[in-house]
Length: 314
Image (cartoon, one colour):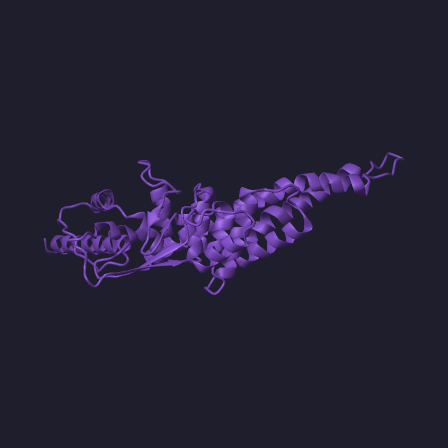
């Protein structure tokens, strides 16, 4: 009887501990809160109930760099989260893709891109709002202020993103001053070279742009070298070796076998180098494009795996 009671106490303690961890995982910035647990409640049922009732806002998941939660939100069967939706962050209105580039979070940028985020829906117009108020948490809170409730100490200042403004000045086309810059030019405006991981973010932008706007011929000498350099910089060299290099070797061997004469044949001519070069060049465009796409998927999966491992370490 004593052994049974001891086992029940251990199970109850395990359930409470896992509930505490789940709460901490879902709210990484918040203080730990105790969740009510019944001794006869099954652990799986507890987790299911907690996951069903807890909804993590996309803004919180992005700012916390919770790649697993962001992908879960984007893949939700309820369709509540559009990868191109405008999100009110603390100081700016941006899409998730824009905010990722803005903060040099290149892993998050790749995640949004492979989940169908489109830079043509850029919404950032260069305006940065600085508000000094205790009750202010994001840009939407500004709409809550009115003549009766506005805090006397609240100070609102408007700034223009310097890189965004410089891009507009150097642009040959005349644009409306308060209009977002669509496409990858708008994303490049947000890239701050002084921030950490700006090099990785630039490599990410380059790869995404080649995947989004493939300009043929894609497999030029420069693009091949740049792709290899970017994949190494982003830790995806294994994709380069296993997909591009291995398949190129296989194609060369096939061309060589086709041009190799049979032993019984007196014809010792092989495929001319010019024809072999055209065959390889025709295939390399598709091969390089597939390598870039597979590399972006690989980076996204690795980011989510790393996020899950970090959560398990709680």
